[in-house]
Length: 574
Image 1: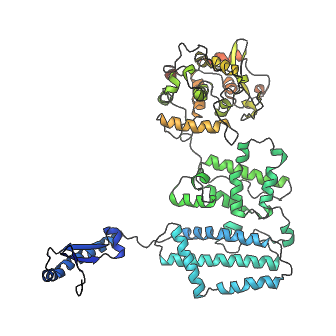
Image 2: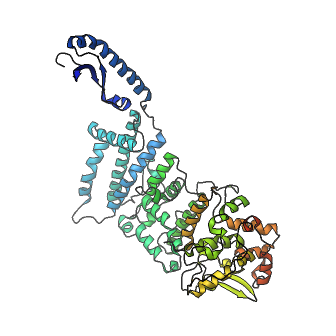
Image 3: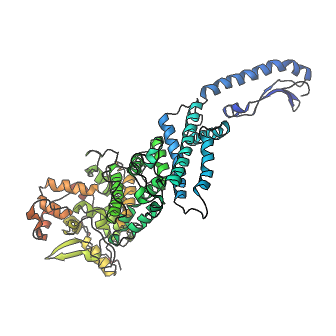
């Protein structure tokens, strides 16, 4: 109102009004504070206004104290974190620099021409002028905010900016060394960035024209993938190499000559695996593996298991050993690497299902009715866990069974676990010893397993469980494993140490309870026969002998639930 700031009229009544400062809007959830002066008389309103304004400013002062108390303090950032941020920033610049160095020199360009682009930049950065350093300060603050430090201390911003300048200088110097001396690009002098490119002392100089002709990382991976010796690898085994290849490309660059990959590159891969979360590509689709590992490290996301890391490193090392055999490189930079993760103790590893867990699983409606009443789209899910419980077989061994694998000799029905396929499909077993003949357990006979197999045979189906689907990896077990993981959680079995493989552990424990001879246990489970020479001769125990021992294995808690009476009626699956 004219000549009286803070005085407003609404519907004839006067109010004192003050706008809320922007910094307090979020706290107070309003843009202005109004207090009614409870009068429609202007002179009376003017008299009451000063006291009302004092009251409003008291409220604002109190809110300011609260805001100051909860405001984010300036965040100190450790030197190690700053170095990590700088290295992450440096990696793509290093890859771009090295990639450009291996490109053919434009016609007519001389060394002096190339240096005309490099030397002025070096002069501008050694030391940087105020304007140039200001640009790096801005970039450093942006990187810190991206890393989760919304209010970084000024000293942290300045230190990171200095690191960025060092990184820029390192790239320029590397280009200069390559152009003038023909020195390999991965000689990094700055110790801050050495883990990415290798130490200056450990990498020898090389003739640049010779290095240009070397097989690159991408070319070597393509040669390895298309090698005829790998023609018989399963899709799952082939996919097992992909994480190591992806890390190699991220750490060294696809255009980097394979011979220029150093031990430091390999150790960088090892360091990433120490923090890489499980299913990183799916969980963090917008991130590289390096970024996902860094994110997981900063946010406490658990890394992959030691076993998974060990498998990736084994395949990673196998690739380099192949390259040595093919005379692409002289020696492997990856030999002997071991995961940084600690292996799980025996108590932390896979455990057998206890009776309580088995009751939770098999008391589901799926297992409480005879198989002939089970929906045909669920029959694989019905039989496979029961077969695993009473035979100790591996998941994929069961999921890939064909009708022809259910046989009978001398009145003894058995399951043939083999890579042979009458349907012409890809079947796999873990080892040579995994091929075996396993008698059908009496409980499975009482549940009508042979009747089920006969019914599937009459339909003309080749696969014993046609409702189970094959995953992109080529394994039926991968999709089945996902279903079983969801199923056991739904049934209240939540211990992370329990999975489908727990059936195999439980079967092994059950054989100990009945004192089954070790040699027969190995034959039933498809394990190695051991060091005894005697065990490597002959065909093993007779099917009747194995059937006699297998019949002793019982799970009373489960058998009290299963519909073991009146289940042998014929089912028409035609």
